[in-house]
Image 1: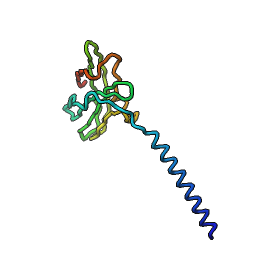
Image 2: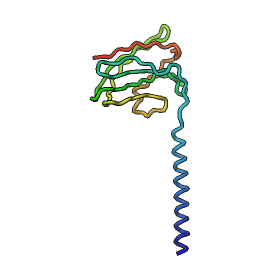
Image 3: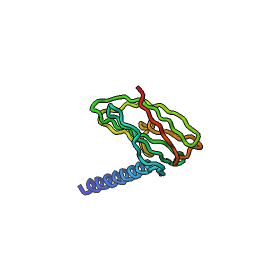
Image 4: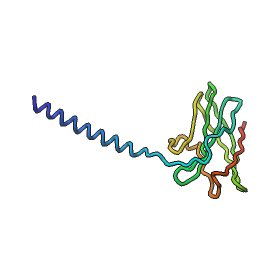
Length: 141
């Protein structure tokens, strides 16, 4: 009986150590990316279908990016299409987006968001001053 208890205790100790090592290894995988915020969340537009679009300019690691936030306030799923014209000084470019949003759901890109939100991230081209970005926004039919 005593041998069984000792064996049980040893097994529990080994399992506890294995679990704690696995947990600490997993925790190391989700190290947050350092970010520098140049412009915090700013509302771009709200559609007549109750869909809000906001943006921010941020540097994740080495590259300045434009992050988008899409909030579907509607009680129905919907797809939205919009175009951004992004300029810095005398440089500019346009980018069109098509995004499907579930009802009553907020989608918000950030430096540590998962790959499903990469569509809401846009790398700024070289030469663009992240502190001096202007954005024109338009919903598409």
